[in-house]
Amino acid sequence: MLSITTISLLFAGISLAAPATTTTTEVNGIYLNKCSSPRVRKSWQSLNTTEKKANIDAELCLQKLPADLGIRGAETKFDELQSVHASQTENIHWDEVTDAENILGSDLLDPVTGFGGNGNGTLGCVVDGPFTNHTVAIGPGYTIAPNCITRAVSDEGESGVAQHGSDPIVVAACMAPTNFVDFWHCVEAGPHSFGHGGVWGLMVDTVASPGDPIFYMHYGFLDKLWADWQENDTSTRYTEIGGNNVLNFSYPFPSGHIVDIEGLNITSELPRTLPAYDGTNLEAILAAIFGAARPADVPAPKTMGDPGSEVTLTHQLTSYGILPDLTIADIMDTKNSYLCYAYDS
Ligand SMILES: *[C@@H]1O[C@H](CO)[C@@H](O)[C@H](O)[C@H]1NC(C)=O
Ligand SMILES: *[C@@H]1O[C@H](CO)[C@@H](O)[C@H](O)[C@H]1NC(C)=O
Ligand SMILES: *[C@@H]1O[C@H](CO)[C@@H](O)[C@H](O)[C@H]1NC(C)=O
Ligand SMILES: *[C@@H]1O[C@H](CO)[C@@H](O)[C@H](O)[C@H]1NC(C)=O
Ligand SMILES: *[C@@H]1O[C@H](CO)[C@@H](O)[C@H](O)[C@H]1NC(C)=O
Ligand SMILES: *[C@@H]1O[C@H](CO)[C@@H](O)[C@H](O)[C@H]1NC(C)=O
Image (cartoon, helix red, strand yellow):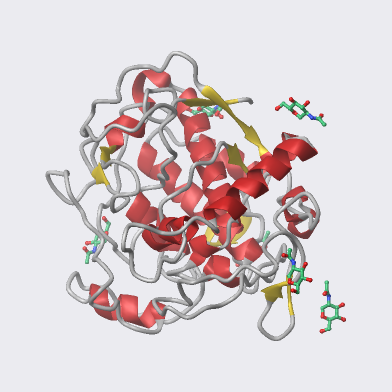
């Protein structure tokens, strides 16, 4: 749904994965016990062809299963995930560091074993790979109009948004902050922008970007960066969270802001002219970004569980019924009972 900056503001850098065991409807900090045997989350590039095919087949399966939650515009289970901008039941992430200066050559974009390559033609529709004929039911923007998956893959990004964002030097710089908010700002400006801006097309649709299955691979990578950062000091970083819990378009990065990370200039947002945020004109800014105001039948993002305007461990995460609601405390450690996974490296 939202823009390169706003995705993380809404999600506080978090995406959800399905529970490893049976679903429970209990909420609020009940997943704090360790799980006994975490699943292993690998990088896409380390999978063999059979494993890659199984993953693609799972995506195609989600795109066939009928929707049943009554969510606006959603025809399949995949659409439901797109519509709430939550993540899917994935065990894989895209190792973007490997592809930082050669995104078009990425293994992920292979037309035979991967997600298909670039868009083509005037619409920029993806023309090879498993999602060639896939119809995206939701979007563009807030509209509900059948469209294709579009991409314009480039190391430069259309406006330099992708450039250098997941370079090893940037990722290393993002590991250095000792507090969550500085870490988040660095990831927001660099790696987060890279995945969206490098793929372009639907991936920079501020509302509908999860219609490209690559979206979930990208968030898998951001989740891994967070886990890597936590590993550096597990005594504090499984409880360290922060940042504003509502959209604030002048913070952390205004539109088109250039961030200097280790001498590399990262464009953290799509350059565009937006009204200045004054605390009351959020809908007007959203309308300027999305080309239309949020329709009345799209639920407003919920902000629940924090005592004030900062994200806290009791902040509630909702996927509008796809998965149980949770608190941030529940998902801080991926090896706790809800997420129950660890990374292979
Ligand atoms: C691929 O990896 C899986 C383990 O996840 C293994 O069982 C399988 O034999 C491998 N297939 C090939 C063709 O190497
Ligand atoms: C992309 O479109 C051009 C013509 O616009 C065509 O020559 C080219 O073969 C197309 N590439 C693919 C992969 O379909
Ligand atoms: C897409 O549709 C064309 C035309 O029906 C078909 O030839 C092709 O195999 C389809 N590709 C995929 C990946 O489904
Ligand atoms: C751990 O954190 C320190 C700063 O506290 C940083 O300099 C270092 O690069 C980090 N190491 C890793 C492996 O992330
Ligand atoms: C980053 O921007 C600064 C200021 O405009 C410029 O001096 C510098 O050369 C740029 N660095 C890179 C790597 O482009
Ligand atoms: C946006 O966030 C910044 C930093 O926390 C804050 O100074 C500013 O007042 C916020 N703007 C609004 C309109 O809330």
